View 1 (cartoon, rainbow, N blue to C red):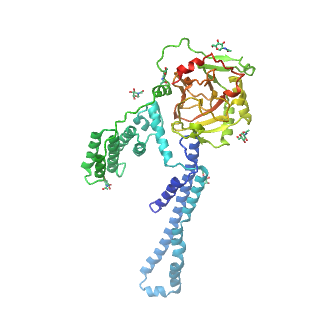
View 2 (cartoon, protein in one colour):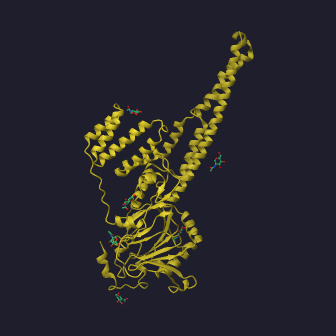
View 3 (cartoon, rainbow, N blue to C red):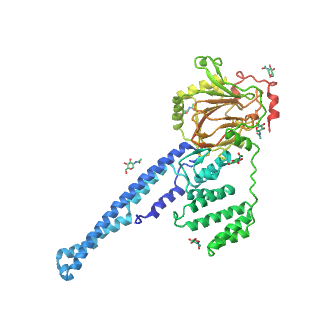
Length: 528
Ligand SMILES: *[C@@H]1O[C@H](CO)[C@@H](O)[C@H](O)[C@H]1NC(C)=O
Ligand SMILES: *[C@@H]1O[C@H](CO)[C@@H](O)[C@H](O)[C@H]1NC(C)=O
Ligand SMILES: *[C@@H]1O[C@H](CO)[C@@H](O)[C@H](O)[C@H]1NC(C)=O
Ligand SMILES: *[C@@H]1O[C@H](CO)[C@@H](O)[C@H](O)[C@H]1NC(C)=O
Ligand SMILES: *[C@@H]1O[C@H](CO)[C@@H](O)[C@H](O)[C@H]1NC(C)=O
Ligand SMILES: *[C@@H]1O[C@H](CO)[C@@H](O)[C@H](O)[C@H]1NC(C)=O
């Protein structure tokens, strides 16, 4: 196999990584990841065909050489070379081979290497069609893992063993993968986490001696990264100790340069991370744990509502109130599997975009804050027409004030940090009034994680396919209700799909009359 020109195959892939790929941001969406599975399948298939083709060609060359060698062996047995060449056919064959055969059968095909060109073209076409991830995608995926560890308090050893929140998945990481995660985290400036991954890589590598050719080199390399990470974390002594260990073994190695660098550099500050004030509530709720809180009186219980609208007399709404004032209700079994499939069919017709977060002056920015892909569906298709009916019946609001339904898909570590849904300032021109209500449909179950949490209200909601959550973002006075701050927790395992419909207050004067005296006085007290 060593005959193959691996560097040229590698070249094709490097070319792809740096130039190819019309899409970006695969990691943020489980749907986009499916394209990557397809890309890899195609590349795998094409590369196998390429190798088979090359193998055939090599067999052919070998046979050609064998034949000529046989002839030469035979010549050697002859006592008189002149007599042999005196035979006109022998002379003809020798000259023909040299003039024609070597070039045509061997040198030309080796130089032009048609299968390699075919592979290159094929792979290019696949990439143009389906896209290809770039190095920032890798960073994104690693960040996703680090984020999951932080939110769900997962130890690095557990994750490396494929143990995610108590469930063991058949996906242990190799020392090299742990090492690569450690290096990416180092590059991202996440030194503490980087150190943990480097440690796991070191332990795995050392526990399996003889598996890796350059074992000692890699062990030293890991230590060197660990020394640098410790330096950044302000642990100069540990950094020094690690470096000395390397230098004792390899006194002439590049680590001397690292030492110089370390000596010249002031140690970084200890990495006391300042989490935002909501962080403690957020992580706890994401983990499905209630916050300690005084009892608020009677527990809420589910009920059937057949009165809200005649539409629901035969199939009453299954309402689960999860919070009172502000009211948050979960309506179970609002959508059937078939209806959900129809929504996906509509969404598939459109391109998914990396979700942006509403920024200043109506400009949107793609931020780590929100990691998902999304698209918007209007209410013209049959399925969206029936959704708009449901929404109007349940909310009592007029669909004329609704934005299109936003369909979002969250992938590895996909999340949305705490945010309110109202704009408050910088209302987009095309809508009248602020977002008075949010209706969030869960379009998938999520294997682990992906809860919706209200960090100020001590509420967490696991996504349940077909259910819809609804709440009001504004008080009756139309002042914003800051208590509705909520978040989408990162997806631990699985894929999360939701559909959001935001109603605006502009068209709802007659549906939910303002009450200037009602609960509006509360808004000041709850604002931060
Ligand atoms: C793989 O390649 C073969 C031809 O080499 C083709 O028949 C087959 O359909 C390909 N499979 C996929 C999944 O592309
Ligand atoms: C995280 O898990 C460790 C045990 O693995 C535990 O000691 C620690 O208290 C947990 N931290 C939080 C914030 O839950
Ligand atoms: C450092 O040491 C490793 C073996 O431990 C060796 O492979 C590498 O080439 C050395 N580097 C230099 C610059 O001497
Ligand atoms: C955390 O949740 C409690 C309710 O359990 C709430 O009183 C508190 O304000 C919340 N803290 C923040 C910073 O949101
Ligand atoms: C609604 O969306 C479809 C594509 O899904 C588009 O073809 C149609 O023009 C849109 N209609 C309106 C009124 O925006
Ligand atoms: C406005 O709210 C107050 C306090 O909740 C209530 O007493 C009053 O009846 C409400 N007025 C209207 C018109 O709904």
